[in-house]
Amino acid sequence: MSQPTTMRRVAAISASAITALALVVPGAQADPPEPNLRSEAPRDLKIGSAVWGQRDLLGYDPKNPTEFQRILATEFNSLTPENDMKWAEIHPEPDVYDFSGADAVMAFAKANGQEVRGHTLLWHSQNPQWVTTASAGWTCDEARDVLEDHISTVVGRYAGEIYEWDVANEIFQDDWDAGGVRLRTGANPFLKACAEDPVALLSDAFKWAHEADPEAVLFLNDYNAEGINNKTDAYYALAQELLADGAPLHGFGAQGHLSLQYGFDESIQENFERFADLGLKVSVTEADVRMPLGEDGEPDAEQIALQAERYDKMLEACLNVASCTSYTVWGFDDARSWVPGVFPEGYATIMTEEYEKKPAYFALLESLTDATPGKSPRTPPGLNG
Ligand code: G3I
Image 1: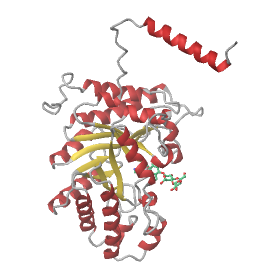
Image 2 (image 1 turned 90 degrees about the vertical axis):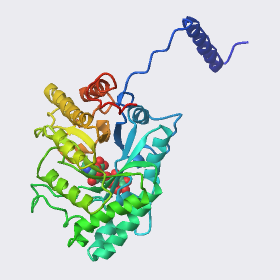
Image 3 (image 1 turned 90 degrees about the horizontal axis):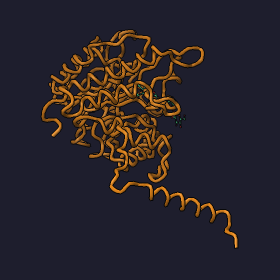
Image 4 (image 1 turned 180 degrees about the vertical axis):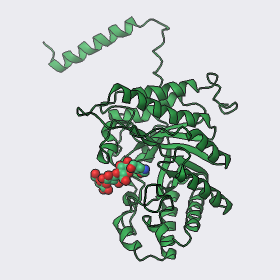
């Protein structure tokens, strides 16, 4: 009697599996896993990626991950919700919280032994319509009540599970904005309502977050905040003011959104050191390096090399400052990068749309490997146990 086709196929597979097993030399070891960013991270440095839980992690099955999820789990030991913990997503109506995207990030991190950076509690952007509308008539007390409820609810929900929170994000304008570098008391609805004493509001925002989760390390976070410049001078002064006021401010995050159109500010390490000298942790929180592309949509070899160098310089600054806690890329693949939606630029991440690792990836990998205990004088003694 002839076997049905499926049975024949199973029999054939079993036979080849047995042959393969027989070829295994007794005592021979399997190839060691390839080093990756996560495995090479020195001391307790977190190597992270942003991820949009609502888009990429809902329905995650650890036994059957997508290729994106497999890489996210393999390469990183820290995740930042790219959008899921922002006001518009997590608090869409006055009395409605939607934790679905944020919970998906937390669950993925837990399943893969990763930690989570919270992002963000006070920002001028991505606020829900109800905040934009209602805030026009807020007194400072009303704004404070709304912010306190939000911070207590969101931070409280994940208390003990989030190692760092970007409490206040992009609260200073830039040099090139009207009015120059100053607190965003125009665009940020909470700072606007409390414009008479915005620092008191900021101080309380940190206190509310600390009350809700005493273990979380609480950060100020901004872009164009890598080197020493007018904006980081303003942050430096604010940090001193908040600390003097007893605010539980613990960290300063430089986002690290760079473009090859501009130069690289070599003072990043010095900038980190001055915040570290205040007793703060520092982090690179949203690294990516974008560039204008040719007509074919591709970068040239020089751009690719320069991108690798810039990613690496930000990492080097972090490795060289003992209180640098984390280095996070703002997404790892070009298919999901926020950049092309906003700038006429691209190729900003460390992997292509097909997850091919770019020279930038290998530059990071090499620097992490060089910084492992015993290999590099950069590793401060005692940090690696
Ligand atoms: O809110 C809708 C959502 O309901 C809908 O399902 C979805 C469908 O596409 O659109 C959603 O809006 C998107 C939003 O993210 C999600 O909250 C917007 O289209 C999208 O443009 C928006 O972009 C994000 C951007 O912040 C918003 O300002 C990017 O993905 C995110 O990478 C970017 O991240 C910021 C950091 O938080 C702070 N630093 C700068 C960085 C880059 O801009």
